[in-house]
Length: 246
Image (tube, rainbow, N blue to C red; front, top):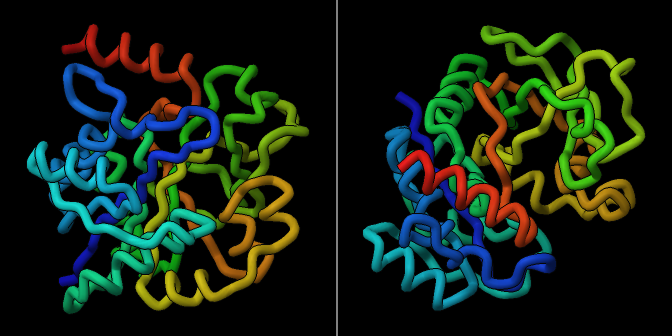
């Protein structure tokens, strides 16, 4: 039976909304909401990887597990590789990188990605959801993925490209990319040692490094698009939704 480790990279120094991991929704920090969603998926151990003592202490206070990492990392994937090595766990097959700023991530979608990775023996996998609003196509804050085949409930096609803009409804097989990744351990190690590409830096999309180096990323269909907290407006919107539901 394969073993999965979920790692959630998190830091206080977000460019657009500093300190966002500790913003509260229903009296619980955003990062602790994500931890609890991941834990509920019950696919493996969950650990928050952070350079900040405040995040570390908050996660522990709320019953989670965290590990301190260096402050030199350029990307979240670099951070999770350091965390994986520090944890020194045995027999891990897959490492899942879960975004720390999506407190309403659907637990079923986490399970779905893990199942597809196991069943297809994939190296790298991610999630995407159907685009319900045409405005998403031109919103640069929303990352889109183009897949080789139409994304359906029971398939796991490869990604052809990831982009922020220059899109229209005429594109085929275009979806809202959800920034969750699952890696075979060796694929994670191989990815991190690659140099950042110009394409990645220009578009601020780490996944383009994989495609630029001919690494395959498979995509599974998610039930829903979680709201990522990048701005004050995002935070207030998701706070309203989650507090209303509770």
